[in-house]
Length: 257
Image 1 (cartoon, rainbow, N blue to C red):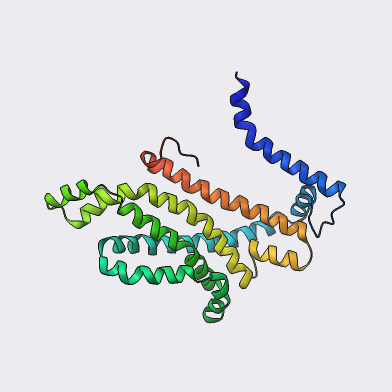
Image 2 (cartoon, rainbow, N blue to C red; image 1 turned 120 degrees about the vertical axis):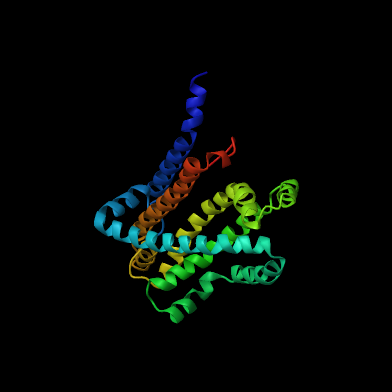
């Protein structure tokens, strides 16, 4: 009986190891060229062939853009969500514009942004912010309006100011929604940074992937992809850790993340 819980916990790791083994055997038995599909061992060798300082430089460049765009998106999204839920006029006028912006493929307008703003860090941050802020706005607004109507009526019957209504009622109810959006947007921030590096960059994991594939160094591109996924997972877990430490009451008992 004690073996079943152990197998249940080890199931994800065993499944992942099995997939890697099947991948390695398929590449060796079928003699798949590394420039088509490199084996896991070739990916590890390619990753180890690059100096740690080079890896660190690319990782820092990507995370710098991701975190900057993510922070700017938070600073824009939270006040905007409060404005959308407190003003019907603002909701009717601004929300359609947000939908239009979100519906526009950022990959398509990224070259235009680079041409307009130059080839520095600014256009990459703008692209990251555009990809990141919309889920934050929508989810935060949904959390702010999820408050039971009787609580709002009680607050207004006691003549509580609108500021206290938001800080003591709406925002606490919206915390689970906000952190759900933060988890999603944190991974989108990394995606946005990589998309921006595809367009204009001289350093970063996205740039390394593009440069490696153009030089047919596919194992190195896969190694950069592995590092990129690890960074994205680390940021996701960091958001979850902040929620557990600062707002443990907002986490459901059946929290799966």
